[in-house]
Each structure stands twice: as structure tokens, then as C-alpha cells.
Image 1: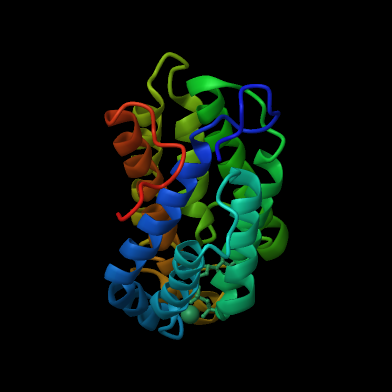
Image 2 (image 1 turned 90 degrees about the vertical axis):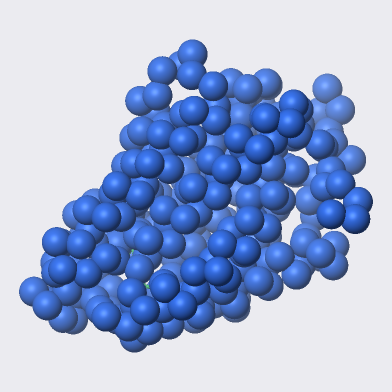
Length: 240
Ligand code: ADP
Ligand code: MG
């Protein structure tokens, strides 16, 4: 059930968008897992796509089977993050797991209603995810990591005019994430496995930045789809 008007917490509709986002992420990561793994084979150990596919497929399966509570965005993100943390090997499992858990914890307190609330929620979630990743991995922008996609996405979201539709602001964020990921190509990795290669890590797209850009693009796409169809349904439609 969607929370009633007097229920404190994130705006109604954001939980169903989060469910749709997690499902779309699982599908797109699955589609692109060989590409992501290939990127990681060039400057790491060739498991990034496999790692993420395993984790997000488990989250999607949990959504199907009803194991995850889907009526509130905060607990939903936290539970999905915990699942990634428990299941996904490699640095990215811990980093994305921590990121989603941090995002879930932060947005649980969001009480701003309407489209402004949805935008605020997206900004808060992304900021918390970045903080979680930075706290765990001690990376900064320019180190050739997932932060090189996520930080530009947050800056673009914050810089988008207040009057912008949420879907336009998120489309700008997705473009910034993709540009940020592409900009990792010439960088020398300073964190993670790729840093062991030193200068030889330059000339390759960072796999974590690439997957982060996919995650942000998925968010832009699900919000655009939900808004295009009017108010998003409060619960996933039966049978689809
Ligand atoms: P592993 O390197 O353990 O095999 P993955 O291949 O799944 O893990 O993920 C590699 C990605 O994780 C890198 O491309 C990079 O974007 C990200 N990463 C690694 N270390 C860090 C870190 N300390 N901070 C932020 N991101 C990191
Ligand atoms: Mg790897």
C-alpha cells in the first residue's frame, strides 16, 4: 500500500519508481555484463559485469518473490544494498552495497511532498551514495572510479534549474554521468585493482564508472517513463 497523505516519509510513488529502477538496473546490467566484464579484463580481473549481474539479479528475484518490502523507498534501498553486500564479490559489491544502504538510510527521513520531494529525494540518495562510497573506498573524483560518474551526475542534478521537470534534471544527470565515465579513459587509476597497473591503466574506460553511468541512466529512464504515463502507479501492475 502507498503511504496515506498524513504518513510521514518520502512522497508516494517514489517506492514504485525505486522498484522499477532496481528491475531496470538488473535488466541493463545483465544485457551489458559481457561489456562491463571486458572493461574490467583490460585493467582489473574481469569480473565486474559478472559481479553486478549476480547481485542485481538477486535483488530482482527478491522483488519477484516478495522478500523485499516494496512500500517505502528507504527500507527498500537499504535491503537491496544489504543483498549486494552479502552476495557480490569484489570491491564493487561492498561499494555499491554500502552506497544503496547509505542512500536508503538518508531518504527514509525525506518528507518533502510532490515533484519537489522526488527531486530532493534523488539528490539526497545520490549524495548519500557518494558519501558511502567515499567513506569506504577513500577515493576522490579523478581517481578513475565509479565516483567519476556519480559526482558529475550529482553536480548536474543540483545545477539543473529548480523549475526544470524532474525527468529533465535526471536526463542531465545521466548525460553528466556518461561524460564523466568517458572522461576516465585517459586517467591513471589511483584506487582499486586498476591502480596496480599504474600508467598502464590509462587509455581504458573504468568499469565501475561505466556501471555507475548505467545506474544513473536507468533512474532517468524510469522517472521519465513514470511521468510520461501520468502519476506512477503506487504498486507494480499485476502480471507485468
Ligand atoms: P574488483 O576490483 O574487486 O574486482 P570490481 O571489478 O567488481 O571489483 O569493481 C571494480 C570497480 O570498482 C573499479 O572499476 C572502480 O570503479 C571501483 N572501485 C574500486 N576501488 C574503488 C574505491 N576505492 N573507491 C571507489 N571505487 C572503487
Ligand atoms: Mg574486478
